[in-house]
Amino acid sequence: MEQLDIIILVAYLLVIVGIGIYLSRKESTNAKDYFFASNILPWWAIGGSLIASNISAEQFIGMSGSGYVVGLAIASYEWLAALALLLVAKFFLPVFIKNEIYTMPQFLEKRFDNRVKTGMAIFWLFLFVFVNITSILYLGSLALKTLLGIPLWLGIIGLVLYSATFSIFGGLKTVVWTDVVQVVVLIIGGIIATIMILNAIDSNIIEALNQLYHKAPDKFDLILDKSNPEYKNLPGLSVLIGGIWVANLYYWGTNQYIIQRSLAAKSLKEAQLGTAFAALMKLLLPFIVVLPGIAAFVLDAPISKPDEAYPWIINNYVIIGFKGLAIAALIAAIGSSLSSMVNSTSTIFTLDIYEPFLTKAKENVSQKRLVKVGKMSSAVALIIGAIVAPLLGNIDQAFQFIQEYTGFISPGVVTIFVLGLFWKKMSSNAALWSVILSFPFSIFLKFLFPELPFMNRIEIVFALCMVASIGISIIESKYEKANYFYNPKGLFNTSLKFNALAFTTIGIITVIYSLFY
Image 1 (spheres, one colour):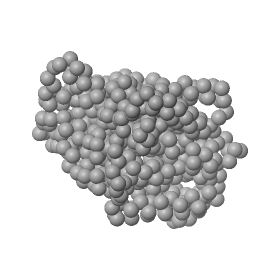
Image 2: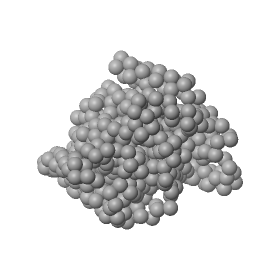
Image 3: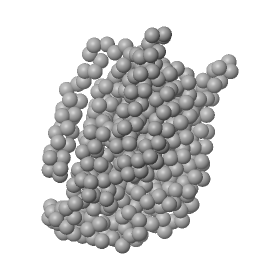
Image 4: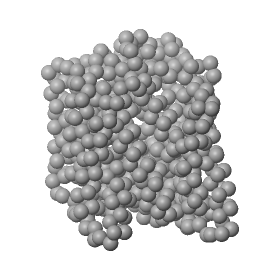
């Protein structure tokens, strides 16, 4: 990089670290303050933090790589996620907030029993540390290596230290407020990188998009047919009506790492409005992370792996001054996602594993001790992730890899939450078996039908888990009464502002799919 780019990048890093240190200067004295920002978050902070936490190297590097290979069809993950966010805001959040749910394992304990809660808490801890944190560190350090020549191991250490500044000491409050700053940087930086790669095709942006479309028309098919080699990852109309809904509801509605922001809102209305705001912002993301990958394909980028597309764009087409901002945007995406994941990992470990264990042992657990354990578990999660991250070096399309293997368990989890929230007869044993069966069902279908697209496999496993859960619950209803949440009339009513954002989002998505079907 040129000197100006280095100055911009270093200035950005110093500002974020400075904000993190400033917000962390007053030590949290209770768990609610550290893990849930004292429930003071406004809608705009929630929306910004949701997007900042969601966008990471997984999107900038992984989704651009998939854009290079697949094209615009990969954007279905983003656009259908916007609809999933609206469903979560309207139907999930009212039940969670009314019943004072702060962690997803806590919901499972209140609705089912301690077995389901503890089993899922342990699973989520392993998933967060060994899949999510690890992949963020690996992809992020890979990008830094490609862009700046920083050795992989050194990039991992740097990202760990950068994230630790505002994820360990300040808790969720620090994470969210730094997210608000970082989401602005990552969107502006991402837009700049997109504009500059389009300028390489034509100085007129509209004409550049037109040329992209005519030079690679198959990359603009939102619904792939069976002749497309990427049909196995995005199987035609099944994308609109199948497993992608399970994946999105799992990620946005049951994932502590994401939903923790909404649960820390001032009120239900603020939580819903912030989530709808995030849904609207999601519509912009494919233009930032997918279009550059398509442009790299059209420009015949000399890369050996699809996930090298975005770094290649920044190195070759983003001009002096803006390159520092574009790299700052990438680091912002990595740092915000990493800090959010670490905070949620420590939340589940501290409140759902550590505190109940000591309570059973009849020990008094002070608030200060919980905060201390939260900080220690955050540090441990980062260290483990840093050790495991280099082992991911053989992944081709990282985004697709993460989606497929998370899909081994997501059907069972979504079954638990959907039936647990909206069906009174769902029993604890049914919930337990839903999770247990999801993995072997997935493995069985993967090896027995290797040609079956994984998105369809998720859909089938979800159906099997639903049938098994309903059958077990009906049998058990003869002998015992299940716990359930009472949902009073009017609980799912939403404000005019939320409805306006929701209808706008739905309308835009309808237009997009009508144009690129």
